[in-house]
Image (cartoon, rainbow, N blue to C red; front, side):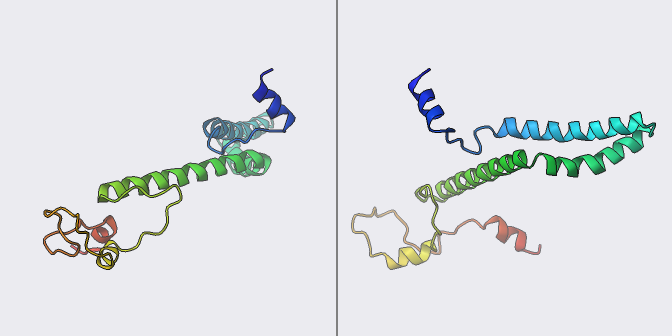
Length: 154
């Protein structure tokens, strides 16, 4: 037994991130819920209920019963999906900042102030290159955002 295994067994469980086993948990959860649907349908088929009716009742009974029966697995899947979504949102914000030419935000992104207000408040940098365009220059326009594009009536 290695030192890390001894430490993990002595200290209890290892800290597992929610996304570490997300694929396994999600697959297991889906398979268990549908297995429950088919088990209910099989019981009804043994009771001489027609196949389509048994499957319909199996869906109506089995899926909600699966939510209750597999609550811990549901919680792990939900936490994993939420963590993955938060990670993807952070990555999306970082990429958008790079596309705008800004420096990448820190791990915990803070609200970004209006760039023109920040540039207007900052003193002139004497070391700035001559070809740099000042903030608010009418020759430099930003591309409209998706929300602005969708908000227009054309």
